[in-house]
Length: 144
View 1 (cartoon, rainbow, N blue to C red):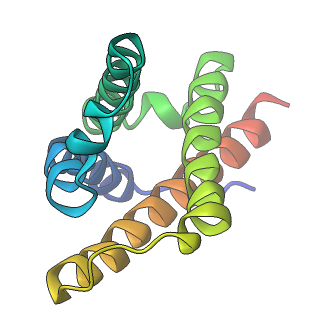
View 2: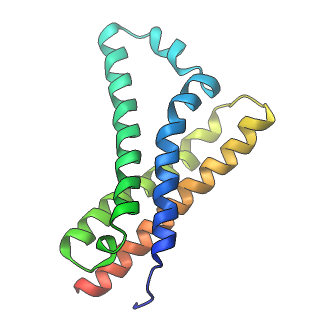
C-alpha cells in the first residue's frame, strides 16, 4: 500500500476538525438545548459534563491543528505517526459508530438549517474517520 495520501486532504480534514471545535458550542446551545439540560444535574455532574464537552472541543481543535501544521509527519511511517493516527482514527471511527448506533433514537429540531447541518457534520465525521484510517493503514505499510 504505497498510495500517497495527499497533504491537501489531510489539511482539509484539519480545517474541518477545527470547524467542529468552533461550532460545537453553537450546536450544544441552539440544536440540543444542552445547557438547560445540564442545569438539571447535580453541581458536580454539571461540572463533569462541561469538562467532557471541553475535552471534546479541545481534542477536535488539537487534532485539526496537528493535521494542518504537520501533514507530512502524520504519514512518515514512524511508530509515533502510527500511534497518533491510530488514536485519531479510533476517536473518529468511534464517533461515527456512536452517531450511527445511538443518535437516530433522538430527535433534533426539524428546522432546515439543523437538518442540513446534521448531514454536513455527519459527512465531516465520516471524512475524518476515513482519512485517519487511511493514514493508519498507510503508516502500518511503512512500519512493518
